[in-house]
Length: 93
View 1 (cartoon, rainbow, N blue to C red):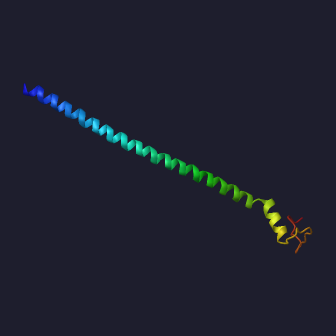
View 2 (view 1 turned 90 degrees about the vertical axis):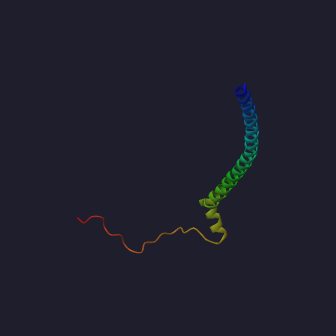
View 3 (view 1 turned 30 degrees about the horizontal axis):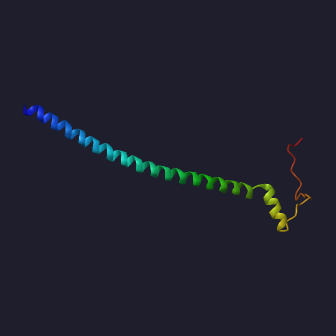
C-alpha cells in the first residue's frame, strides 16, 4: 500500500512543479515579447531615419544641386575649350 501512495504523492508534486514552471516560463515570454516590441519599434525608427538621411545625401550630391550651389557662389560655366599641346598622331604612316 505504501508504493501506490508514494506514486500518487510524487505525481501530485510533479504536477504542481510543472505548473509553477509553466507560470514562470509564461511570465518570461510575456516580458520578452514587450522587449521585442520595443526593439522592433526602435528598428523601424532607425530605418526611417536612415531613409531620410539617404534621401538628403542623394539630394545634396545631385548634379543639379551642386550646379545651383556653384552658381550661388559665383562660379560660371566655362564655354570655351583650349588645348595646351597638339595631340600626338595615333599611327605613323
